[in-house]
Length: 68
Image (cartoon, rainbow, N blue to C red):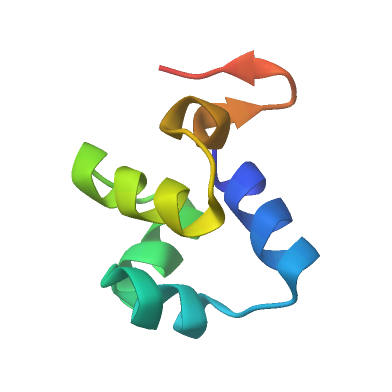
């Protein structure tokens, strides 16, 4: 799931800090998500998806599969 986020972020040439500033999701949350220690809750996933202009279901896609 993090890989889709990273792909979107990298395609736009932005940083986790920028995403954090625009969404209110802390960089610590994003770092924990990257390490696999934490999965953002639904409200935070919605903010991230909205920031990228996609639906949450698209953000949840990882290599063509939807994760639960």
